[in-house]
Length: 471
Image 1: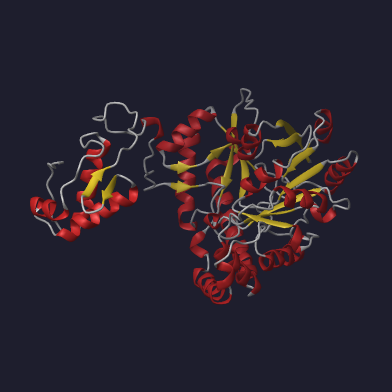
Image 2: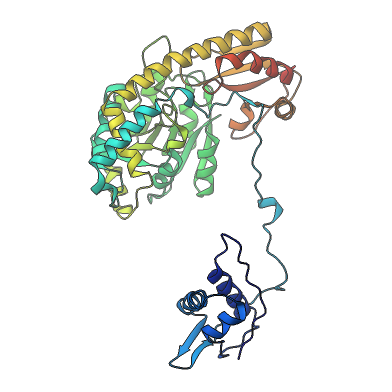
């Protein structure tokens, strides 16, 4: 007959049956209770531990359900003959390796000139909640089901109407694929089997996509930029058949690709079969002083452009709703490969987005944010020139949520990054986006200056900190 040596703590919040269960389970796993050894009767153990019979019963029933013990009719409970773990010294308590530990970052006192954020303080959360209530009321059936792999048709239809009016995109709702972020969508796209895929990307460019493609064992070629954007001749020299570009607001330099280069790029795509252009239109909704720049896809007469868009910049980065617009031939292949894919975006958020757009609130929000961001951008640039004078150059493209600034300094990029930490100023240097990491000795550095998440009252302080960082 097995005997137990453990105490029951009867403090509030500590369930007695769970304590009994955990102690007996531990004794079995540690080999202190042998296979087929008889356990005390429920009443006897209850008396021994000075607890109720119900507590022991619940513990035994849980052990029985998990296979730690078995019963013999009218004889009681016995220890099951279970396979023993092969482990190190059981006295060692597991600890996560120190290099994998995470610590909460203390952001107290920090100011941000990051290009990756948006101003959530001006987001109409109350209107969003109203739209969410409508989504819950009208789509309970859809919320109980696994959605279409490309996202609910109603939402895709709403997005197609939106981007047709705002970006000139020519597509049907069936061509839209919704996903939880542009990266995951591109990964799925690039996993469509194709022989001899060679990819060209802008350099400087979006390093996350570059690293992802490299990790997928793709042949990836960073292509330098000239004054009009990505170099067509260098694309040709690499024999690339897929090109990633950001023509409406090149990331990170901010260049806008002129019509001549756009036509050259589209002409490149039709010179050979199975050539495609992936157009990342990540922040095109924000354009100041002039109208929006039409998308590259709107000029495409041969269905060679794969358009990608996101709601992260216009709304909330944490919302995680992005989308692809696929040409018909790629759509057919995508559906074949991903017919069983479970949609990654939150269905409730997608239907909420539908009503947010349908009600006109989305368009009103973007219009408000354009005005707000233009004000911040102008104020920040003015403060920068007041502080840095002729030692500063700004590539003043009136678009997007960041701009490129060039500062005269004797410091290198590493020193700039270290000083920024001391000053509690979040900035990103051009080094982050140089895919080949080729930096020659020079007397200036380039920063990608974001202005979305800095309040107007903090702009002067941010510029003062930046001056101390650079000078």
